Length: 442
Image 1: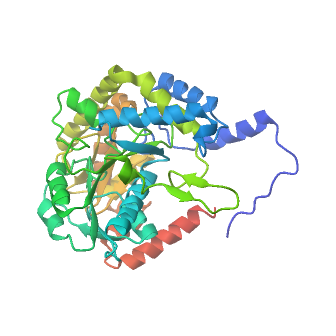
Image 2 (image 1 turned 30 degrees about the vertical axis):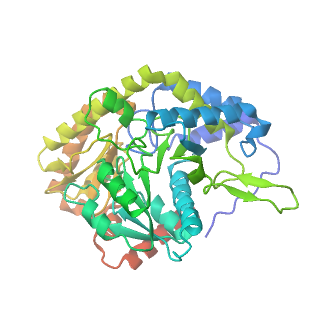
């Protein structure tokens, strides 16, 4: 049953309510201390203060109509232009900011659906072909917009299988998808050959660089081997990149870029016959946060090229220390050959979900994956000081699980074990819905 919480009869004094919120916040994951491996991208207190001040400066403005606030129009256009300059754009590149990677992906799928309606009216049941490792936001978009997702298993190296994806294309296909990198394993899909297939077949090709868009360009400048992945690749027609990830902006800020304005036009929504006047919207939302636009602009300018090179080196060196440490640990190894700042690892002899529970008892917030059962790390500058502590706790957690097999039946391990192994995915769906209902009614 949902909690019954009514509006207070009298307003709370400011300090009292803020203290109540501080008390609640004290129970949250410790991201400042590098104890989380997802959700927050933290570039230090000084940078955080800058983007907080920028956000607060535009706290009440509304980016629904940027012509009322020309400062927002300029900042959004600047963020889009800077992103395009990093991701192979040219004078024809067009884009907008969105509320995050999910909205960018939703808009990409909606754009190609509407493009296909205009250019290929014979396609009445549109499909998109994507690797099984693609972000589930594509599945959400497929569900929302009536585009059938054709999921193709990845190759042995965990990257998109080009030949298999090409074979999955049908007369109803409108879009191919690749990741740079994929979230589950941190590997970059073979963008160039996928783009060539898309171009040959006359399809759109979207690169999901939400995670890597503000890291890979600087990794390349630092000498890391980064394959071509962006709009500089012939056949790539759009790309998304999150400023609130390795752009270190405030939530939620992402950018979606298209090869030209003509394609971007299919993203926009315009209503001309409303009694309230002409209504035009660039994305999913009506009212848009001005603060996140301002914080994104501030973050890019506060960091500059030198700042991004510095933190990218820090992140990638920390990632390498973690990967090498895990691979050197008994019974543990990293999946594939990660290209960026995220990766997953498995255990040969211990239940990884029980290990995650053991790590959480030691103060770490862990992310669990399935197919295969694995643990996932997303590395930020906050993790540089905690590498040795985490590796020590990881090895201790593995040994704890090996020493006490009953741990496999405790904590959240049974739930994740069921999700990972149950063949009836409908039953899994019901279990997850029950979990969601418990979260949003407590």
